[in-house]
Length: 134
Image (tube, rainbow, N blue to C red; front, side, top):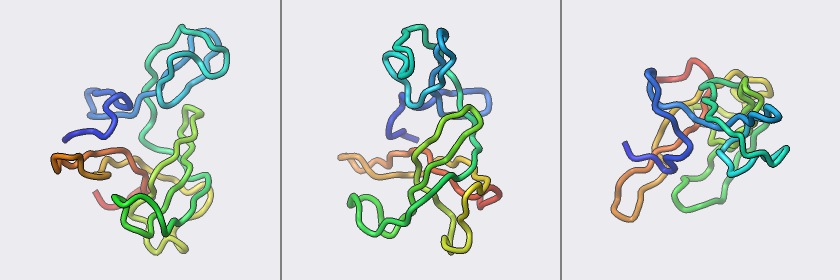
């Protein structure tokens, strides 16, 4: 599996997890990783694995976008327990107008986003309602 952005990931004993960073000076957790803390500009940063679960904060159904995303698709903001809000594609949520709601528990999945110039699928994180298909 080839990742769209390998810098967003950490390999753990349980598989791939998203990784942000925690500032050792102020405690702020950020995603994706930054060169300096976005709150205090400190450089005392350490990897912080992010949970694979969260709650849907808000979403939109989009009908026009990049050519690699078949329309319509759902984009949403997901709040993870570490206090970070992630922008993500929301998948496995049809009929979206009946399934999606604020504070809906969601779980991360890894799925193809697009193909690179050589035709290889590039994978990224997406979220789906908890308990969706494997």
